[in-house]
Image (cartoon, rainbow, N blue to C red):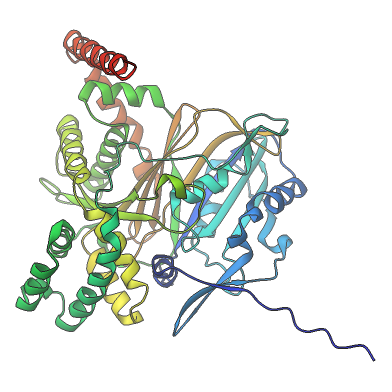
Length: 494
């Protein structure tokens, strides 16, 4: 008599506290998934896409697992994969143009992933501008935006043949001008301190910073991270505008036409700031125009954006998971002078470079992964009230890429938002160009194109004013910088 086969043992792995926080942050009106779109010059077939996903995407074992959360913690659990379900064909109505693709992506961004399966899907739009489009959705608990963009790039090649050696994968990406992550080693200590502070916050309410026992605790902990926590905790809530209304749960996405990266760099050189500063300032100007159109009194008003900061060590560049912190950046939408607006944003980013804010928020996220859900939601509401949007900038590769032999013409991704925040600004560069994208709750911005169409005019204001600058003085400054760099290089070789 044959012996019955034993059931296959299901492998489980513990989920990190930070990843669990992102898993538990999801709300029906604010889904925690990163949505991206790749636009291809010529058609791609579903068979080729599934082959790419099978061979490359699923080479990351984590994507073969589903997230399971319970009272004692969260784990990654092996799951049976139905590739036909995860990778599907879709079609656009009407002209199958940009507006129709934006509507399709909006519907996907508003639809939750199936929690009984691994939390990701790919949708192939077979006919788009004579080619195809691939829309990817991946839950934030798997990895942060920097890691997931690297995953998506691993599906591409630098030549249409896709022969050995042409595969582009595990590209090291960093934010341009991102604040440096000083004191990353202190994050572990702050995780423990964060648990104490979050519990005290729920016990004493939003006025926690007035509790004398908190001051005593911070004095015992000492250091910049403890002071950074107090600074962020005492930030005022963001002003009440149409961008801070209650959320409805229906997302709308849009993106602007390509801007030449060299023009962005030229503006940055002219004003002595980073590419990121220029693009964020242009986005702030676009938001200013939208708020004025909506009749908002914004003279002198400053809104905040939370900006992700990469804390991933170089040796972890090939790993998934969330390894980033958040900083609060002031956006002076009440400033009518575009140059002054740029200078204020650049100064704000410069100040954040030496802060421990990113490390502090990373430790806080790790701590929140282990607290009861009511503590998590309280902290989420407390901190999300201090910002009106999330803003992220990811630099992509500056060479043409190919997917399944088809040339990649454009790419865009949209960042999720947490708590009461309902707007995400995304900037992504690729092959000498920059794209600006917006995702917003429809209760806040019913038509994101009302903001998107203002982005290029705001950018061109900065470009025009830069052209009017004192170029002789600027060229002398660049020559001095180049001479100094050459001296340093010569000294390094002696």
